Image 1 (cartoon, rainbow, N blue to C red):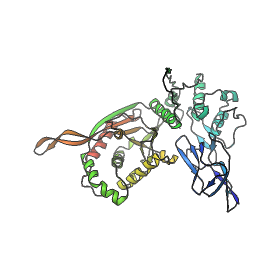
Image 2: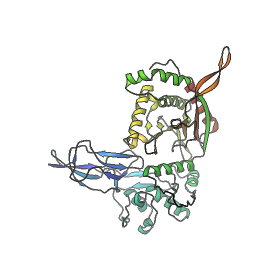
Image 3: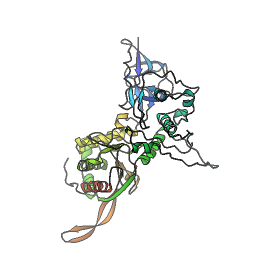
Length: 446
C-alpha cells in the first residue's frame, strides 16, 4: 500500500487560492480515478477537484470554509501501487495587482509571523501578506468588517480598508441588505485618473426590514456579480447606442439547414454563433473596440476573445469566453459555444474559460426582451446586447417601388466606455454589426 498526496490544482494564471466549499468524500470512502473528492470556489468560478488515482481517502487536511493555496496538499489517498507521491515545490511568489495607487503587493510563500488567525476567524495567506506589507497590526486587521464566508476578510475588504485609511475615512461595516461597492481591482499605474477613481466613496442607503419581509442572504456568486457590476458602473461612464437590424435572411437560413446541420455535425446551431461570427468581423473593422484602459494607457488586444453571457439555473450569470474566435469558422464557433454553454449549466467550467475576454455578447432576447442596456464586463470597454427576434411589418424597397412585407427584426444595444470610446466609434460599430447581419447570405453552404 502507498499513499498519494492530493494537491489543490492550478486553476488559472490569476488564481492563487481557493475556498473549500464541500468535501464530497469523507475519510474511509473509496475513490475511483477521476472521481470528484471535493468542491472548491475561487473568485472566478466554482469547480470540482477529482482524484487522479483510485484508492481510499485516508485523511482530509483542511475543513470546509478553509482557504487553501494552489499546490498545497489537501488530502491523503491510500493506493495499492507505487511509492509515496511527493508534492511539487510551491510556485514562486505571485505578484498581486493593487487597487490602491502606488502600492505593489506580493503574495509570500510563507505566512508573516506578525499576523495570525484570530479566534473563530481565518485569514487567507493573501490577506496576511497584504496586511504584513502594509504594516497592519493584528488588532487593526481584526477590526476589519469581512464580507466573505462566515465574515472572512477578503482581498477587496482589506484593500478597501487600506484605501479608506489612506484617505482618512474610517472603516465601517457594510449594510447587510446592500452590498458595498468594492474598490476597482486594476493593474493601473499611479495616475491622477486612477487615484480619483479609487478615492470615491459610495454611500449605500439604509434599508428597513418590515414585518413579513423575507431576508435572503446572497450566495457567493451573486455577491461577486453585485460587486463586479457596481465596480463597472463606478469605473466606466456608460453610453448605449441602438440599431434595428433585419435578420430575415439569418432566420430563414437557419430554419432551412438546422436539421441537416445537427445530423451532420452532431450539434444544434443557434443564433449565437452567427452573432459571434458577425461580431468578429466588426471588431476587425474597428479594432479600437477590442481594447482595455489601464490608467491613461490604451491596451490594444491582439486576440479576439468573445465573452458569452449565460444565465445559470440558479439565476446567476456567468460569462464563458470563446478564445481566438477570429481563428474559427462558423462550425467551430458553434461547437465551442455549445460546449461552454452546456458545461456552464453543469458548473463544469474552469477559471481560464471565464477569463481573458476582450468583448462580450449578451442575449437579452432569450428572456423575451426586445432590448437592454448592458453593463460593461470590466476590463473590457464595450458590450453588445441582442434583443428578441420578432416578426414586424416593414417597408421594402424594390425595383417596382416600395412595398410592405413581414420581416424578422431585432434591436441591437451597444454599451461602451465613454472614456475611450466616443459616440462615433460606438455608433459606427453597432451599425456595422447590423450591416453584417443583414448581409448574411441565405444560400450559404457549410
